[in-house]
Image (cartoon, rainbow, N blue to C red; front, side):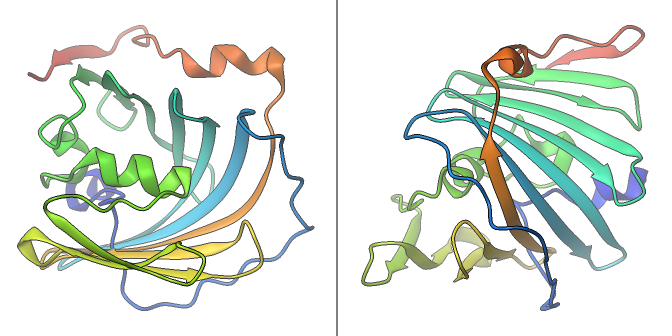
Length: 209
């Protein structure tokens, strides 16, 4: 599983060999506007040397915090990531290392082994258009993003199905990711502690500046 971290990430990543990932399940329950959500997703991550399939369980507190639990399809934990507008914390379980730092591409390099702008991930999960000065995007008639192109040949493509199901394909010259968003449901208020991440016992702490 160390290769998952070395090749990747998620490039937001995230970037994908055109593979068809099919999903099945009951129709998702929609939360009220602004309420916390639990989002189920899967991704295939591909580099020049390796291909991995992971499950990504996302807890979203809109505009406040995102927590991602990344695991192998057989349940082996790979990483826990907590993102807020102020910074990022994550535990790489395969190396027992805990990182924290500001909200920039340098901070997520240990995960992806690439400089990936975490604002793209933040907006993809929020269902927002990641248009920026270095990322030009096209939208459909509903103003949803459909295709973006950025620096270093970064491309992001959206394919929409019945809400909330959608497929995000991200790729650049070194990495590809197909990210399939499947189902979502309200996150119970009792799970508020989900958006707190502490350094696990025995993990080495590294501050990324």
